Image (cartoon, rainbow, N blue to C red; front, top):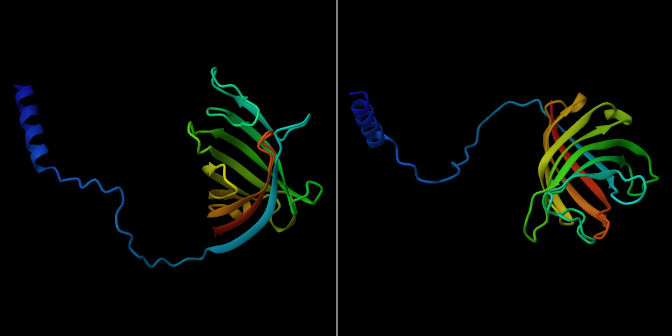
Length: 188
């Protein structure tokens, strides 16, 4: 008897279910929300060095069948952790203003080399000393890219925004890179 009731219930629910149109988005609507958000712009450089005796990024995991080959420092499935200095200028000898710590993983099997970037960029000097921004984003290995700012600490608590990254130096053999960060942050 219970099976009979469940079968009829399923028929009734299926017959009255709304039709799904298969659209993955809805139309955007303008809403009026009062805001007290600040907009802050930051500009700095990150030095991501994989080579040498004291690298800032190191390989910590890779699939058993993946070989790290010359000319491809981030093969599919490779996971790196990083502790990179942030500087005022592109030279590693310029003033250090913080550090970027996190991890990135190679997530593309195709020719479009792509990383998944997750990191915390902490500032250790100046007005934002002790504050940080958090990034979590797809990171295509191209010279200019955009990554999402998804949070922060200190003065950047509850931050949202984006950063345009420009690879001003990239060594395709070693994977060493210097990235210029132009960050726009919205925060309370």
